[in-house]
Amino acid sequence: MKTSINFKAVKSDSEAHNFRRKTFDYIRKDLTGKNEYWSEEKLSDRLHKIEAYCKEKSGRKLQKNAMPVREAVVVIKDDTTIQDLYKLSKRLEEELNIRIFQIAIHKDEGHFDKETKEWKPNYHAHLVADWQDLETGKTLKHQSFHYSKMQDITAECLGMERGVEGSKGRLEAIEFKIQKKEEEYLQLQDKINDLKTEIGSKKFEELIVKENDFLGFNRIKTDKTIDNYEKVFKSYTIQLMKAKEILQSKNKLISELQQKNISLKKEISALKNKLSNVLSSTTIHLAEKQQYLQSVKDTLIKALQFEKLKQPKIFNTTKENMIGFVDSVCQKVSRENQIPFSAFEEILKEKETVNELFSLFNFDHNLTYNHSDEIVLPEKKKKKRRL
Image 1 (tube, rainbow, N blue to C red):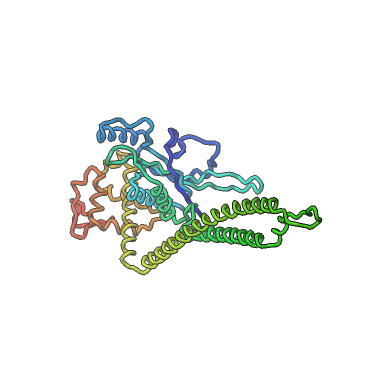
Image 2 (cartoon, rainbow, N blue to C red; image 1 turned 60 degrees about the horizontal axis):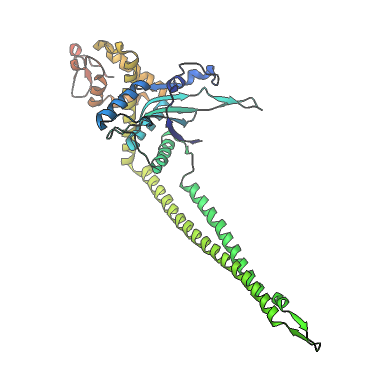
């Protein structure tokens, strides 16, 4: 299954549509419960921040025609999770400075087949992004290869095919073009040979004009014959010149395509070597594990931030209730995003992660830690609890 991503200016009713804050006649309400949502910040709040930062950084107001907030529709699979889209968001931020602050997975849109009456779902996700360059305060500037890279990142993170086939498909297309151009080349060559053969054939005898003189002898009329030859040679010369020009053009194109073909073969070889290294290198596997755990950590932090945004009073809790609250969030994120709970246990072994999580609460300064990075409450130091 193929995927694609395409950012456009966000619409004013984006949040209402994405988070189903009003009903629409093109959705199946019985499937809306399968949708998933995540929001780091409201659209209006983020836009105000962008405008203020632009003024602070550049000394000028944001241009009226600027598009500082953009939205993309991403084709997904039926089992694509919020976690997959978090991973995609992180890669877009790391490699292209695009910061996603809202995600919505829609599984309630589609259509019924006119003939079979079968439901054809349109699984997709909406990503709303902050398009501001933090160095200049202006909007990000991307070139065509950045948008191509965006497609690669999306396909890789979602485990799907790219909208346009990769190196192998492009190589086959180039080889096909070369074959067609070579066929045209041969046809032109045959045409030139036919012309040369025709010049040397008996057809030219027909150009000779003979007439009987006053004595009755059949003699060649030189002036008329020469005139016929000149007309024919002029016509053939024009045809040969045109054929030669076309031939040179085809030769040049074939040469360029062959060079591109060689380049693509090298690219495929490099990709195969890279794949071999990934499969055989323990260092790469370790790096991928760390990257995965980091994405789990980011997901948990964003989930806690989301809970704090929705219900800030919950974070004014007691130390005794705090562990149970974080544990319940872990359970929810694990269940909704198909993340093994062991992954949360793994990241919570790190003191730095625990400190970062508890910085969201109002009493983090009352917590102490022992040498094994387990959380120890001041009044219950003899009885340890691990998240």
